[in-house]
Length: 366
Image (cartoon, rainbow, N blue to C red; front, side, top):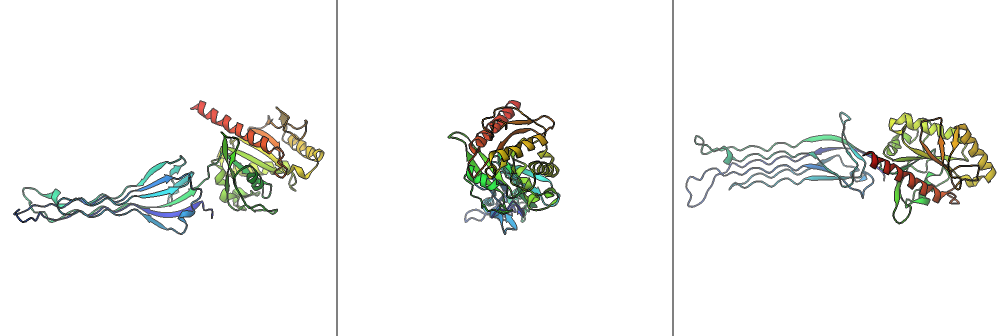
């Protein structure tokens, strides 16, 4: 079961109490104080676990606590430190204060480990309180209480490419064809109810992660459908692939503009995110009909063709298009068919090239 948000109360351990004891040995008269210190309470850590992809392990949990420190003992023996609590979370998990809504930690790096709550200090034993005027102190400190915080864990999946489209446009079919993901596929809307991740192997040396989220409806940014709940998962993607269904009752232009509007309204991060377009289910029409629909779509967006034509449906359709009249960075537009594998390999290789280009730009900028 996919779970991407949970609320928990986390507590560090209480420090152990110091001991109020005195040295008592057969041949030692008037033994002085020898109470040891209490052990420190256990700390709470978060650690990123790359082998987990959901927060389902926290399902049904309400409180997690580190162990308390043990009490001090005689002969100046310190109590044992409480066992730490290490919480493993998937990459992309945010730790949010449930009361204020403040993001405390944003855990995205592989094997990242952060200290969240420190355990309470152990109390001092009576050995520390001896003096010339008080040679038999009969008190010791109590251990300090641990800290408790009510938090919300929110998972935002980390992927290289995020698939965006209306329900039943072929997102699940595409990710099942190009990756190791095996989502449910059926000819009705909202087959995909939870996000899916798939690893796309380009060749022996290159691969990238693709994310499929439930279909977006008009009004998703206002809470309609499943979109609002899962739109956050594509905030972290490096690149977006808009999937437009050529057989949909909505025209290609309407699909594209509605999706762009909903994404931009949901988050400003989406506005300048790089993207491309895949026009799906082109096998449903003959080449001439498909060409007419796609050319009409190009014309509606005032797109200027620019680049290599070899992956197009015909020589009249470019595979790389740049929109001069808009700020949006449209990297390419591919007509594809997952059913016949038309342009699928070309799509994979081009996505990989775009991702490598973005990685190189980031490296140079740093």
